[in-house]
Length: 234
Length: 324
Image 1 (cartoon, chains in turn purple, red):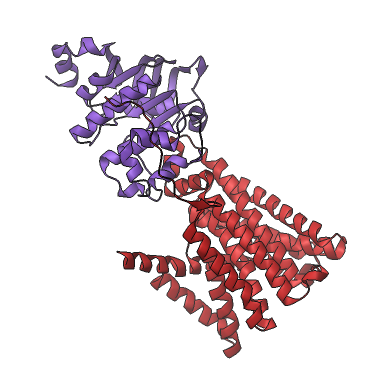
Image 2 (tube, chains in turn red, brown):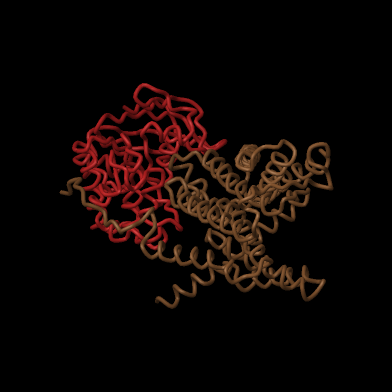
């Protein structure tokens, strides 16, 4: 579904993403791993058409159509949603208002407020709380719920486990797997190796903007030497 | 493992999108307002009519300022264009009041569309200055295009249909119109689209990154806001039966903005409170002193310093504190 070929992007003189190629298939969870500052967020922003960064060369194809040069709202209209790093909620909007932007609370098709509250009952309890009044875990849930409201076929998740308590990370993993069963494709950008390996089908490791490893998540979890070498974990 | 099950969201009982409490408050306010002509003099009914009209103008400005974070200094011009068109259409072109009214609103919306196309890519002080400049252009046209606008002398015409000639009847008609457009504006800002304007006010870049076309949303917001300013302008034409360049002047826009601020930015209905406060002050103070503008200026300064959230905003904050 999503094919990225030889993508180069960066900020002015700073060449951050260097010739990255990556595929995400239908109903597949692909994890993009890497330490801080390796170009993961730059990569995801490039897919979503967000500027900066600027795409210097390469192709991004979604269902056979090029996404390069499209504006973020055009890309979102093609059913690609983003859960941005740091959640980026709206402090003056309530939980329910975050979910009903552009999709009425009475909508019956696709993802609805009821359905989002079904997977995140905590949000239903907090429906009238504003974005700025939520805990880290609730903010993470709302960011995912908000992305679901555009009925995406692909979700780009930028470090969704960042700053969450272990129990919340586990809950998030269950949600991600649940979304996969619904047929959604997910590109998961993570620093949290164990969280990513728990849900991903395939893994790419990014180092200084280049893919230095790609393969099955199950295989990678056995390759302790590689994990130590590339990600510094044992 | 969690399955993607559904759980019905809690539904609160509503009528036309309003909670029972909101319906009750709205009904009481409208009933009290409707009863006012029974106890007020003709002069005071005139003032109340003016308050309703300018309340609608202040609310239309609040759609942009309070909800999209864009304060317009061009809404006086949009308002005034509607007034000009209604007076011209009835007095010069001989059209019926209803047709003239519709034409006035259409013209104001068209002007808002042009303003919106030019202004939505700017924000902050640049938006303020651009809308101010656009308003000045409209003012310049109204002043110089004497064959049509009557120049500095303005235009006079009996705009009101016969059944609205009495002060009371016209007040009730304006009250009905103001109630209707207030409800429409309230529904608009509470709609999913209105929420995106709030999102834009909070963070434009955040909205962009979520895939919203910020410029298009602001443009539509501007056009809708202009439509409602046009309604106010058309009502004003019927109220005043006269229009001159001062109706489209910067002072008109500033007054609308001040009414909105005095009522409370982002409170929407605060527009009526702000309009009431300012129109009442203007009329009461001017009957005591010739320096009423100075008193008005000092009042604005005091409002900015002590109640920057406006009258409604401050009352809301006080109520919240009490509830705690």
